[in-house]
Length: 474
Ligand code: MSP
Image 1 (cartoon, rainbow, N blue to C red):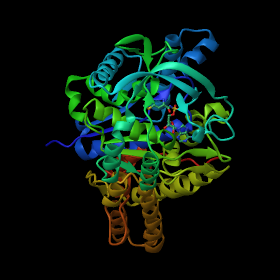
Image 2: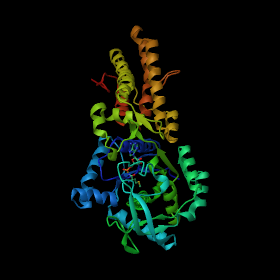
Image 3: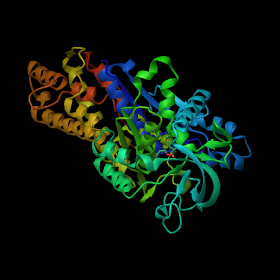
Image 4: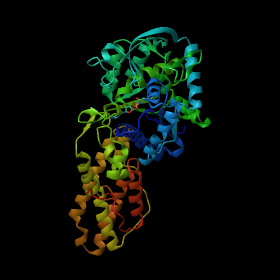
């Protein structure tokens, strides 16, 4: 059987420009996709990004701006595409939930769930957070507000909804997650999800009567499909956009933020079971990047755009700082000045300086390196396959300082030409106890693709001094 890998990011609400929180999730998925492209070949990897364009929140924002919702989302989509391009995110599909192919397939799936008898008509009465597009229970509230949208009043809502029989799936879900048939990572999130399921599930609304900006419910056009249900389906509908993409289903991993892990585990898996569609292998819930302890988000007004970081640290500098910002899975507060320090230490003085030292010496002596590209080191590969993305970079950092020490200890500049040549070739190709510069570069390919390629190019054939990779910050 051909190996394949399908990785997805959440589809972001098309009501604000991307910020470093959304960039963080997208970059993480890109690192995973790039790794599997190297392992399985380009044609065997599918990576999906996109925008979530329907629902009350988008409709309200568009209304505030005085434009039609479709025109409004059309105006925001390019900002996402540009941001991902500027971060060198190599996705295969950019899914928009207003694409007719998605709308048709989503409505086909919901009809199937209805036909199987899992949907009934009822009335929802309670609170709703428009920011999260989520029905709130008393337990969700902190000081009477949604904890993720403390500046926004939850709205009281009473409307006719179609309900999905989530309760029917309680035992099946417990069995699935306990036995890792669908793996929830990190493990502590799996425990949280399981504990909550065991407290008891309630049936959920899957339609909105009062929201017209959405995909009509096929058997009752006076409702639209609840935006979260429709949005989740994008992971599946994307694989229907090309005839030969069905083979990618089910997803190997959904990368999502911890705030939406419930939707991606409990609700998503129950909907798929009801529609008799096979289940994803893994759902990974990462943490939040915070500033002064607050989640970076539009509604809190503390957004940093990916562009600001790229202007300061360059493309691969930004990729490095984001990928290493947190233990993947956990929250991380970014301290002031932290990115500057890390850039100087790990990139300008670390990797960049090492490459410069070695190539200067190599040019002086005249080194011919072979054009062989080593594979990704197994420690780094293992870390990425376990979704310990930042750990992969920890290894690399250690090897860089190992090579620095080796260089200082061997002092090739004090040796005869032939001895010095040997030392440098050892650094380029590898030696006892140290990783070669080419193995380091190769292992960096998923993380810093341009830099990795540039280093591999510089150390193939006649080695010459090149441009500084990471100029020191002013
Ligand atoms: N549209 C839904 C997702 C639907 S997926 C079928 C949504 N969109 S969102 O734009 O609000 O958030 C998307 C993702 O960005 C979430 O996974 C969220 O956790 C992540 N992040 C938003 N701010 C973040 C940080 N400050 N840090 C890390 N990730 C954060 O939810």
